[in-house]
Image 1 (cartoon, one colour):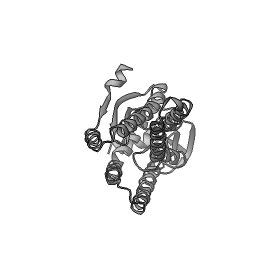
Image 2 (spheres, rainbow, N blue to C red):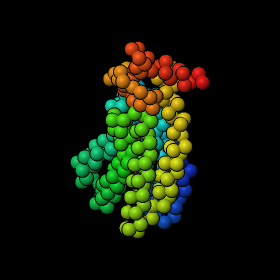
Image 3 (cartoon, helix red, strand yellow):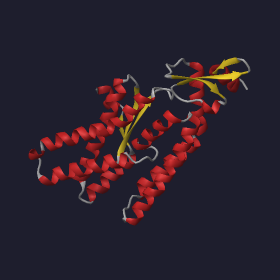
Image 4 (cartoon, rainbow, N blue to C red):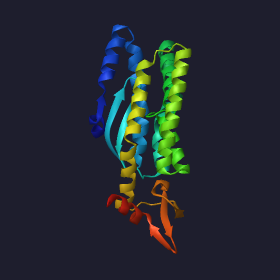
Length: 252
């Protein structure tokens, strides 16, 4: 537990947000939000530790947290889905506990905890990079499509949902410009890092032996490679292992 606590870091924007809230008399509100963010991250951490992945860092932001993990891109999609859902699961459990002990809180504090919890659950399930909803959507896309195509579809869908989020904020006069700017920046970075992650995806498959759920004997292109699937390329009457095809890419 102490090792995990040492990896928690507070983002500079969070310090700035705390100061602004304190000056405006909302120190109780921001304290509750940050507490719920910590509960959310603990849900992710539970499944990360369960699957024996290494935690690199845990960053607390004003509207959530981000846990960086040292794991392979080609790790199990189902395990990654459990990690992605972990934050929401922990918040739902916290809501149930809160309801059971609501008589021990004053009404205003209880309502703040409940309402902020609902807001953060809904917000985190929006499928925009880098929110949990996007991680879930991306993983479901990877179950259906190749890594190459699922990454591209995820970028497009993430941008479309950001536009919808922007329109909703404009119509309801919600001043979420900091959050929108942050989400837009994350989408741009994901777009710029596309080639890096694709090369890393391929290099992992060349260097390591993974446990695959399916076998595909009719693969035509490197861009068709899917997570959790072992691929073979047919040339004439012979089948070529995917590692041989990947080797040819990195030996150019």
